[in-house]
Amino acid sequence: MKKNTSLIGLLLFLIPEVIFSQSIKQLSLKEAIELGLKESNAVKISGYRKDLAESKVTQGWNTLIPSLSYNTGYTRLSDNIEPFKIGIPGFGERVLNPQILNQYTNRISMQSTVFSGMRGNYTLKAIIQQAAASEADYRKEQADAKLTIISNYLALFKLQQSKKIVEENIEVAVRRETDIKNLVDLGMALSTDLYKATLSKSNLELNLAEVESAISTMTYTINLMLGLPEETSIQTDENSVLLIADTAGIRNALQQSVVNRDEVKATEIRTIAMEYQVKASKGAYFPSLNLGANYYINNPNQRVFPQEEKFKSTWDLGASLSWNLTGLYTTKANIKEAKANLEQAKAAKEQVSDAIKMESKQSWNAWQLAQKKIKLAEFNVEQAIENQRIVLNRFTNSAALATDLLDADNALIQSKLTLLNARADATAAYYKALRASGN
Image 1 (cartoon, helix red, strand yellow):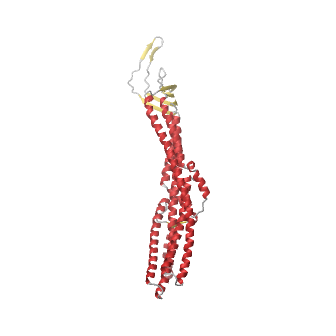
Image 2 (cartoon, rainbow, N blue to C red):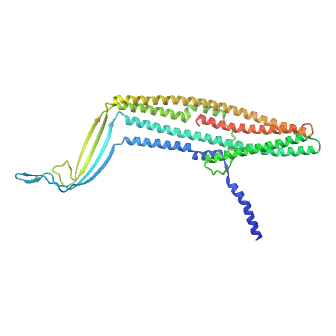
Image 3 (tube, one colour):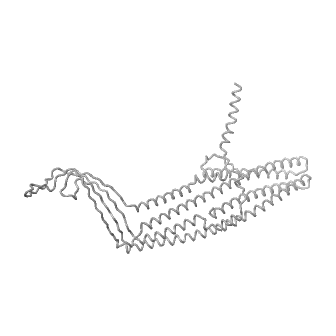
């Protein structure tokens, strides 16, 4: 019984650990991007728009296919129709309209527009270009979603690393508090020094609580974005965040941003589509030529005289020419609208190009600034470490105040946090530059 009780106690002790470990997910930046792109609603909506545009292309092709149809029918006539008879000398009496009560009709028809001012062809070309633009929009949404995922992932990384730094400094603050308390007991330090040490520790604990709250909020946000269970605890991967990027490669890529960006490609394609729409609108000035053919198998066949209760086949071919003369006047408004859409598309292209040039310039400046900040932050950490070492030695030899030591500790934690933020910001600047360059 004792053994069973011990086993149950061990299981109860281990179960929370197992559950907690299952809720922790080690997630690299690459994995986060892959999950996020699958779950992004913006990407999904853009994908549906792309599919819709592609279906319209198929519909456009279908309008050029000749229309083929089949019609069949059955009619039962009343039996009170008196047949018309006529007597012919030498041949006897003949019935001109025999009473055929059951009548069957079958017709196969084909209709085709041969010419309509090229409206169908130009409209189809415009639709194809719109579909290509939707494809570019889809890639753009993917790039935007990717950058959003990266930004949130880096924000979580910075918070988690800040938490580690603050926790390490809380441990240092506890040791400082203990050391100063011992000095106060020996009469070698003032009680105000102990108050300052305790206050410094309390401030760090407050900072830790704020960081943990921010981590919880950001983790929840990322879980929703990646489609993970809301209670999942994400552990970011430092190796996938802190990187060494090629400055020259970034500069060269940014120089080609206007050419590579999908936004520019989409506006260029839409401009071409609008040009085709103008041509399609002008097609209303021309007449339309249509061809048609019909094949009949009827019983009785009304085209055969005299009628017989038999299935007989006939056919016909025809052509029709129609010209909407009113359209010679009303089409002007349609053409004007199409030209206005064309000019709007051209202006949108220039607007997007200017915005991308500005974004590329800002991305390059942000990247250069991030590199300078890292160098300065690394230097400041070295100086803070050396300053802390010197002040600690002086404090140990009673040549420095406790306040000086606490200030040195705070300076070191601030320099470490600054370096952490600088490195993460450099990674963010790198991915923003890639986004700006269209890569």
